[in-house]
Image (cartoon, rainbow, N blue to C red):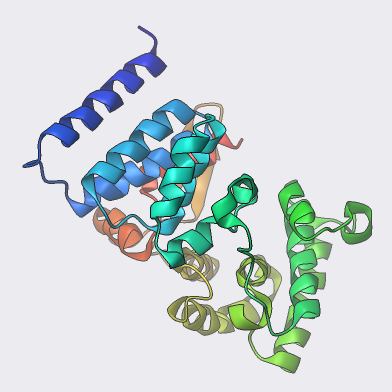
Length: 298
């Protein structure tokens, strides 16, 4: 029996077991790990296994985060289970439905008609930040075509072919001007996707460590206001600590990644025994999953 089939069988067994054993209790940690195993399998395009894990999650908790619902439904969509996806979409509450329907693949479902990104306070600034975000990622060999398509942007007009260091400096200097003029951006002003770009620009501003450090309180406030997710704070916090020669707290930074021998070494980390507890609390994936995904990208 192949390893993939074996894991599919085990997952199906677990799914049936938890459906039939009402007395089985899943801890928050077990649910958290299963959520991220589903995400990991979707990244590796192990869609059948991810779909089984999504089914299991639905059977053991009624409080799935919309981000995991998005992943599970997209997996089922990719498997051609459109009727099932349509039925599940109809069962979502208004807030979760709105978040899921922002995904491009949901355009095939009538229930998502009319669902669109919220109107922002400054559309031109939003698009400027999106373009800066695209250049940040392109300089790291990650051209986000889906973002170009989402905002009807022409690659030749948006992407400036420049090195990573030049791109980072240009983005950093422009973001400083934006903050000076508008204050620190918010999702109401520019939207959630542009806020991801704001975070990335700050995260990559290592050549101006003092300014980067000053932005941590702004990122923390953005997380508290729901403008960014918790891991944005964790990544910047750790980066600042490592850049300062101190220990990180959330295990986001590596001292070494060896794709040949498939090993990783975290940068010095405080209280490593409780690392996963901290990652779980802030909404991050288990560190073991994180290491595997990082290795897979080399």
